[in-house]
Amino acid sequence: MVGGLEVGNVPFNPDGWGPPDATTATASTTTLPLNVPFAPFSRSEKIGRIADWTRNVNNPNASRPNANKTASDSVFDFTADDSFPAATAAGDDSTFRLVDGKPPPRPKFGPKWRFNQHRPQLPQRRDEEVEARKREAEKERARRDRLYNLNRSNQNQPRREAAAFKSSVDIQPEWNMLDQIPFSTFSKLSFTVPEPEDLLLCGGLEFYDRSYDRITPKNERRLERFKNRNFFKVTTTDDPVIRRLANEDKATVFATDTILATLMCAPRSVYSWDIVIQRVGNKLFFDKRDGSQLDLLSVHETSHEPLPEAKDDMNSAYSLSVEAAYINQNFSQQVLIRDGDKVAFDEPNPFANEGEEVASVAYRYRRWKLDDDMHLVARCEVQSVVEVNRQRSFLTLNALNEFDPKYSGVDWRQKLETQRGAVLATELKNNANKLAKWTAQALLASADLMKLGYVSRVHPRDHYNHVILAVVGYKPRDFAAQINLNTSNMWGIVKSIVDLCMKLKEGKYVLVKDPSKPQVRIYEVPADAFENDYVEEPLPEEEQVQPPGEDTENVEANGAVNDVEDKQIDAQA
Image (tube, rainbow, N blue to C red; front, top):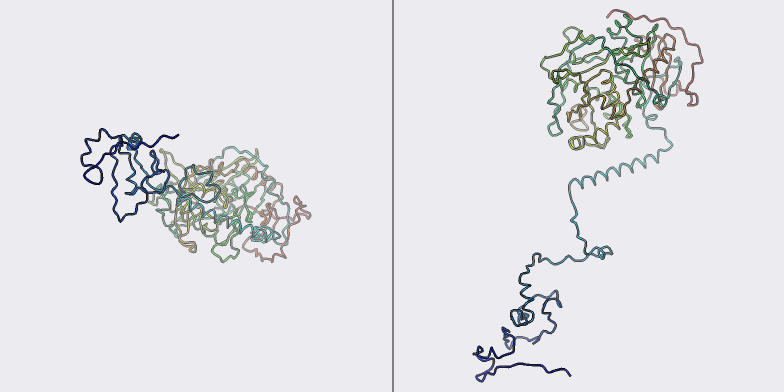
């Protein structure tokens, strides 16, 4: 049987209601807990309970976690009494201080929250760069979808270059095709030449202004115009120095650095180009026509994005080529120290008249040994000079131009400072042939440094005003290795074409890059072709001589070669 409830010694108050006033005398004899508060109630208050049997002495709010401590609950709080069993626990809790009083996070709905309740939630990063990268990725994805749908709808149409580009020269009916060479054979060629020797240096050079190396898109400089300075694009046989060297029998093959670079980088070309070849006696001359495409600079030649086909459009291939040539000339003169201090060489500029203001350029006439009985002389150009550690170094100056960021997908003003490598990689993809030709020209001239300028339009719809955003320097050999330009393969291409042309009879020929296929063709042309008295009437495409099928790639001439009168080279300058 359960024992009875011990009430304890209850003091008696004979004077009235409630405990007696003098409780000190009976405090020692009572068995009740000390410091138990007395809860006075008024008649107007509603008494909800007289005892809280659900209260936990160790955690008073455990049974009701959401309940707040009110005045009515303090009646049942006995933790202040030392004789109460929970006094020791209350002493330990007094040293505890709650730091975070915020309520716990509300649970998220979903199956993942059930298993990740105790895993800390990292705050979501909202950085401007992350958001910008997402937007760029979204634009790139939309562009790829657009191109994918466009390619699917144009699957049966011919290639881009075949549809957009025509031959650089009209093929006349009387021309006789002798051979056609696919570019696939060029990749297997290799030839090593010894170091060249300088026969003559002409012209004068101004010093490079190093302050342009510190240009950034934030402190861009306006591109100036140099209308008073003359630039010369003289072909091989019109060069008086090459005429003199040919009469002195200094070499067998003669060319310029522009023509040699075009041959060396032919496998990378997409646009059509042509080179005139003249076989005179035992000598071979590589020429370009007046107003040839070689005088201009291609833009977006190797890009997958097609340019507008209308010639009048400012972003057409022809308009951009003229604009790029104009930019390149002005850039090569603006980055110089124009204080009259020039480095003069053996002879003055061979193409300038007396008192004429000419651009800063030096011509190096160099000779390479191709065989025991065959030497090649080429006129190479350098645009500036810089003095480092009391040693003079030659520089080539070229400019890449941005016309509309929508075509390239990279905005130079935003990417040049932080992602210059990405900008260069995009240019290598869109202008692989142009950059390879510049590198080849720098290697032919043995330039110590090649400077590349990044020039952009002030506004995408304004093709007259430009600004310089940056200038970067590269060593030609290091840059050639970076763009996978093999020097031995370059000379192998030149050597194979020279050997092929030396087997031809004396006369005039033209080497034409096919506009739609990766191959070149050799045509025999009349002796007066491309001269002033030879008038070419442009023929409609359906009336032009069509090349044979691909199954006859290595076709030899069927008809007999017409006799051509010997052309003697005038020795006068």
